[in-house]
Image (cartoon, rainbow, N blue to C red):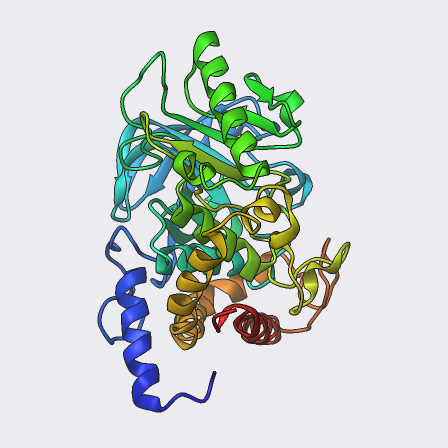
Length: 406
């Protein structure tokens, strides 16, 4: 796969950069400026500076602290709190921003809610970025836009972060259409930590969902009824399940998570949504910091073998006529751009070169184990090389499964 002629590689790389917002054939990351809305983060990081009111510490994932943020050349009023579950317990903290006014940032559409991902366990700080790019190559309907930044908090340097759109409903985010009491559009998250959330339900088969969109009591019941009907059809391996769920989005979601061997899929951060009275769509994809060989408590570090194929919905989808064919169709398109994905990693690494050095001066993690690393290397370049080699081997194995007609 990785012995394509140089001319073919260049053409494929240019195609990926166009899809991911890199722009043309120029591989030099820009120093400043805005990125197209489909950008995969190939610009050199800019500085984001946050000062909380009275220099207050951020101690909770629940309680916001008033703050000012200097970002994208502007000073904005905001509130900030912690975010995440296991990631919040780590020394380098992830954060959630809620701006006072909807504001476009670095070319991304205006909104109030943003996330600052710390990527502490992922020493490449690339795995979320790679997954987002794969989702765009598969033309998923919505993929969170992101931009790498360096964060200063109350005058102290905090390291390299990934500023991303928070997963929520909205015309420029997860579009669920107009409100309808009888057949509402909705956004739900499969989350095994459902009991700590305000609005949740379980299907009759025990699937745990947290409702992430606004919903009344009757609307929540209508959402549960819809998901129960979808599960009834899917578990019966009936083609009718793909009248209720969009088979293309389900296959795309499967391939992103299977390629990355995402341990968190169907544990948490597994989103599905419906627009108005349309079919269920899978996505957006989210939370890949312990994917792609960066896990030591199960077999998801391996490049061979299925991971997602045997999990709940996907197990039944593959027994439903039409799903395997759609997966193979999409895989052939993705695999044809495998070299370009590696090329994009190289471009992003070049963009992060100075910032990652400052990050590891602040957080001297290289050469040390951080949960749940499967491997530990002494240098950033070695961590990146491991990721690239892992992706190469993983794609080769998946192509041995999906690259030909059964």
